[in-house]
Image (cartoon, rainbow, N blue to C red; front, top):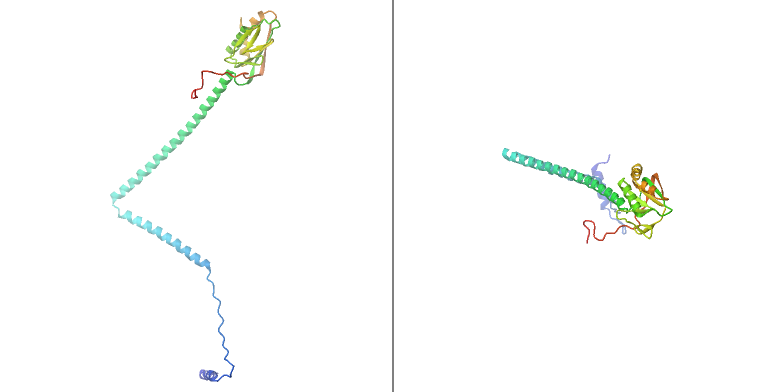
Length: 265
């Protein structure tokens, strides 16, 4: 077993021995150890934990201070705070009720506006049919009048149109010319004119409405059919139809004085 003193003596002798010229004691530095990189994951976890902990502590501190403040208040102050909160809650409930009532009113107003708009559209359609500005179709009847000798005059056609309207005719045309509310029948040089357009026999009067009622209006004693049958060479025939077409006026009426409400002069 080598003693510690023997080893020290050997080393002393080695370092005290002179080295030959040109020789040097070999010396080497210890190799540098690689530095270990610090992982970023644990650092982020630590930072996030610290932030969450700070927020929790702040929230707990706020609740604690609020609780201490309430404990420091007197019973009268607490009663006033409670009353203020109750009044605010009641005010919010009233506001919610008002908003709900406004919503219901708006919905009802919307429905009423829709109903009024629909009624206005239906009225406009009815007036357009009555004025003759639109073509119409529907059930009705046709009165065909054969008149080879030209015995039918304009006043007989006026009576025919009037009888049909009294019986509920919604639209009337003679020889495919619409009869409007402002239409006129006249006679010039032995020819019947409707709104200035000549009508030639045979005459074909078309009326849209309840066919049975219209026919009954033409057949009343002393009415149109009796008048036509009394004329020499005239033969009249009534035919019901499930669907008839009546055109619109060839020229829409123009008004020189009247104008819709709200329009300019």
